[in-house]
Image 1 (spheres, rainbow, N blue to C red):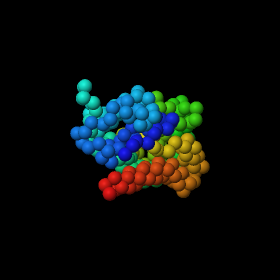
Image 2 (tube, rainbow, N blue to C red):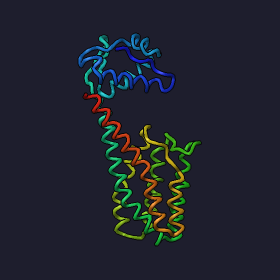
Image 3 (cartoon, helix red, strand yellow):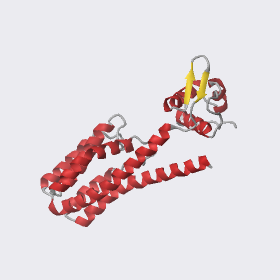
Image 4 (tube, one colour):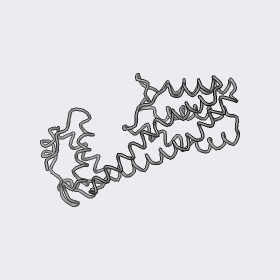
Length: 245
C-alpha cells in the first residue's frame, strides 16, 4: 500500500503522521525493515531530510529503531507517545472539572466579598501575562512557563477574593496541578487558541458585584478547554476502536 504524498504545510509533521499510520496498520511488521530514506522520499514526494527528521521522531517515540549500516526497523506498532498524550489529556480534563467547581464558587463569593486590592491583583496578573503573548494575543511559545505562572496568579487572586480561608487553602494546595495541566494544554497544538477576553469577563463580573454573572463567567472560561479536551479524548477512543477493527 503506497503512502500518500505529503502536502506543503508542516511537512515533517505530515510525514510523521503518515509513517505512524502505516506502521500502526501493519504495513511493515515488527522486526521488518522499513524502506530507505530515498524510497520514502520518492513515495511521499518530499526531501530526504524531511523523511530523516520524521523517522527520528518515531525512533524517539519507540516505534522504530535504527541500526548502523542495516537500516531502520519496526519495534512496535503502537506509539507510546500517543498513549501518554491521552493520559495527559485525561488528567487535564480531571483538573479542569475540579477547577470549575472551585473557581465558579470562588468567583461567586468574590463578587459579594471582594475588596479593591483583590481587583488590583487580578489586573496586575493579567497585565503581566500580556507581556508573554505574541502579536495575535496567543501565549508566546518561548515563554509558556511564565505565561502559565501569571495565569495561575490571576485565578488564585479570584479565589482569594472570596475571603474564604478554607477555599483559599484548598486552591493553594491544588495550584501546582493547575499549572501542570495548563502547561500541558498550552503545549498541545490540537487545543483551541486561548481567549483573553474570558479572563476579563470574570474580573468584570466580580467587579460589578453580580455573583451569578461571576460564577457563569468563571465556568464559561473553563468549559471551553474542557470541551476541547473531551472532544480530543473521544476522537482518540474512536481512532483506537477503528484501528482494532
